[in-house]
Length: 560
Image (cartoon, rainbow, N blue to C red; front, side, top):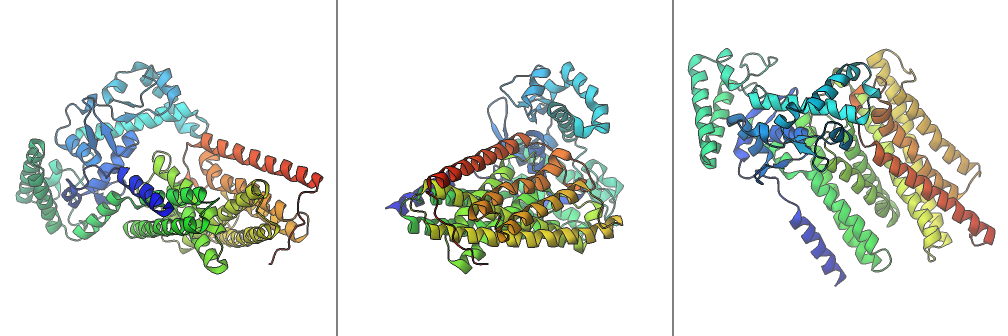
């Protein structure tokens, strides 16, 4: 009965997830490649990235109440842009900025015309334009948002004018910038240029008339003409469809769904039906992990590199590592604790990257020059971030230890000892990976910048994190603290990981590791830090009260 109820919940959740708008109806447009942001990509993928950049969503609702998908949005702007300047498509996320420039506080999306005619916004943006170039890291959030809105307006102008639609490559030189259809005669003979223009105009008319099937056929024909003339430069149909499928399926969304459901199942069945609940949760976690693997394979094949070049990719990689370690440990120790500890962390990580596309940019971008063709960088970054995954697993185990020690009377001395052993083992692996990654980072720094160590903020915080965890491990060996102190340390030391991982890039924003910089999310991180401090403080108070009353059982030995 219980298993049927949980399966029904799973089916309901899967059914209410909306499919990607326009994905099936307009998939032939994915055969048209466009050069954008240093990369060749399907037009459908370009459309989704553009709409996310403009509005923070992959679909919008017009003034008339019609819901428009990303591909429809971009095609409409490409073929008939008139009227879109009055549609609410540009995000103004900061409520402080909206108040300062007199916009509706209850809305986030505004039209290009509204913002262009807003003199308060113009004055605000111009006033901080110079500061953004000289003191970017010290700008207030609303000032940074004003700069971001200005960038979105510029992007909309490029869409409206059509100058962003670079779909025609030079057949003889792969390094040359692609051009728009109107400039095809710069690269192609007059006859071919006229033929492409004719197909494009016919495709435009078909789309605007609502003859979608015909427009799709003409889109495929348009792409074939270009590919036949530039076979060495224009992407193959298979590679374009592969990336289109990756974008439409969105494996990270399904990874998130599986991990969230697994976490809920573990929580709901923690007090009863534990074995059944664990089996269902294990199955959901494995499904999520398979989607995780599929997503990484796709991203590696599309980008041609390991997917750990920015904050978005590193968050996904760390959540992957946490699940991977928990599955390995479960196979070794046959314990339920590992997945229970790792799935909530992985679910939160996936929720963050899926719900905050403007903070964690999901677009696949080419590497900056210092990161290209560097074996040491790849190993260094993968190793460092995997250490974060091991520490995250220890974090989850630490929470289970402390919570059950005070709230679960059936949680005995033996179970506490087992959990402490698992925490210790996770910390050992994390310290080994972090130390190795830090040394490899020095090798890479010497290769790229000509010095092994220079107290760069990223390097400094990596060392601080390593020292914090070494203190916890050595303190346990030296008997400065026991199992309880180990659990406290696994939680408290993760705050140093958070600083090295998020704080250096998004708060300090200084140093040579500028390729990972970003902004946003500080409020959420501070709330998390505060909650952890409160939880640790509560645990310490409870521990001392019980110790004073003689309720704490003697510590059990840890097998090392």
